[in-house]
Length: 190
Ligand code: HEM
Image (tube, rainbow, N blue to C red; front, top):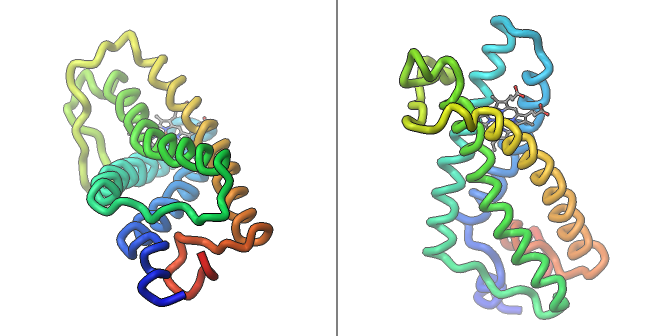
């Protein structure tokens, strides 16, 4: 295959950078989330929670930027070897990932914006002395609903990750059609 055709079948470097940076942040964020949620209230928990919020809002901003990037740079076509059911599943999985990458931090933000601190302040603290605004005007009665939605989306994220990583491994080692999310030359012939 020529370099030109190979390039047309891969994601571009911007999409690849967004993918791997956000993927790494999500794995770290899952660890931070499960760690701080089980801690007793106190300074240690507050410190971990500041990291949770900072990572969460970073993921939110990067995911919005990634969505804009994707609209401006449509992804390459699926490899010809992919079955119809695999294409349908991949499209649904990718769409759900965008919903989650924006919905998960958004529900955390909404949960926080309807809690007690939002009654006396208009911002919440992040790492490095930064602060982030609460969303004004949300119904306080929905506080627990936002918490449940956040927890449900965490489990949906885990399920999608298993499906997504499983599919990538199948394409790499069973179908041998390579990985279009690796920089050119590293992912085999896709
Ligand atoms: C992609 C972004 C995010 C991921 C992957 C994530 C993940 C998690 C996880 C794994 C937990 C622990 C759930 C459990 O108890 O089992 C959690 C809890 C929590 N998250 Fe997030 N989170 C994200 C963004 C945010 C943001 C932006 C905020 C707030 C601004 C937030 C606020 C919270 C709060 C308040 C809890 C504790 C809920 C409780 O006390 O039960 N999260 N998150």
